[in-house]
Image (cartoon, rainbow over all chains, first blue to last red; front, side):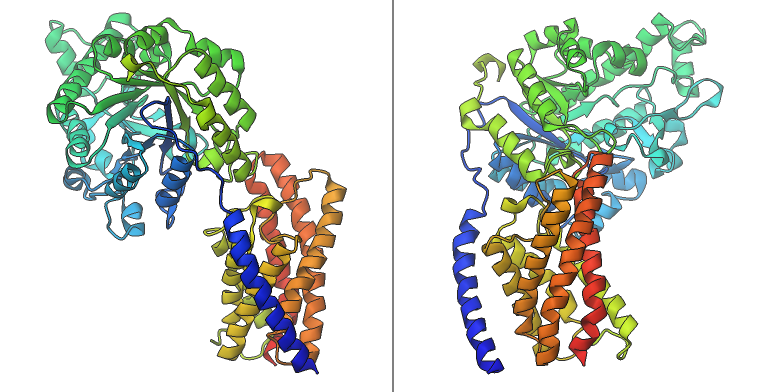
Length: 412
Length: 188
């Protein structure tokens, strides 16, 4: 009896399973399918980084991310290619300088496959623009091979201070990496190395641009290394740099040197691929110049930047709006496409979707050219206040075809 | 197929707990935790399969292992299809603590009963099989509300949905321990 009952029950359940899998497999798929033309919409970007994020490492992480982004009508990704002294693509230059052609763990997880090549191939299939992001700029950890092998490439502050408390937003709570060394942006060998990395990416991959960020500068307290002092003395009749790092002429001299290097990069990139976009994602001008000698307003005026994505990671609405209305931003808006970087949160600072939605609307109301979100893991990963599905629904509503904002042709 | 120390009850409980918990962690690579409507039959079937696969490795005979996996897959599909939900991967939508405890106990008992019922098909010994249904129901009835409460507390403290996922991990750990305490009977 027991055996007969079990058999009948089994048949019944198996039948039920087949029916269920057939019916529910269709209904459980996401309903995000209305695609918009990538040429007619605002910038809808996201930064993909390796820190506090598994997207580049876990199996199917990249495929899943790009599929979801495409389905939700995103159109641009900024994948990290330079972080903590390592490249995230196969780099001959990095191999020579650091001994590793790719970040070792990334290389291990992908079995030696070139991750940037994979990203580019997958993204092109999904109509996503790829703008590799040199996240660390001139910053490098003290423990990195680069810092160890080339100590003369590093710039320092007065009294031999050789590091700065700095960290990208996603690792702001990571005490192990918060002290950073800084490659000297004025040093010709550093310039050659950094420019070389950028050109490798532009030359070897079908990318739409490259992006530099707020770390592409020099902390104002630095510049007291031997090379910089001698260079300064050569150009100032043997005088040493002022003791005050905030001395306006001293600041201007160093900032102009960085601007000169930016011009070299621009020319070199355009010589290889004229249509590749030079994107910059800085902090607001006053901060960028005062603390990092990054005079991006001049860069925009000189035509050294094709796209600006201003980082405005603010929770307070008024503070957020104030950042968008600064004269330097308005000037940039009149010259090049300008997008706004919005924080979707970090582990230490989760951001509710209501705030993200409100900030997107503020950006749209002020006729910016789009938005980029920092960062992938907090779009709809688990480090958010709401469920991942609720977040995706919200992004879908923000970016569905009914809310598409057409860009003015001259801005494209 | 044999990874458990020879008939050591404690050893098997430990391994069963590890297999269940690791199965859940592994399932997170394939399934995204969400609210009840977000976890469909397919997701529940995949999750159930992953966990049963690891648990099945601890059973003695290969045929038992295969039947265990198939019956578990069936169980998870069934409870999701009939509206109980994929309780191992869902987070209650309510933020009211007593409601969470109550619904967690009720849905946990129902879900555990459903899974136990289909696993009953795989267990060769009739007495053990009948008993397993109630072990499963009781384990889930206890584990779901406990995990749910831990989840909401962590969610509120951190403001991260990750807190709820950790609550589910607690649920699975408890389920692993409670069912694991009876798992030795499956091997007798």
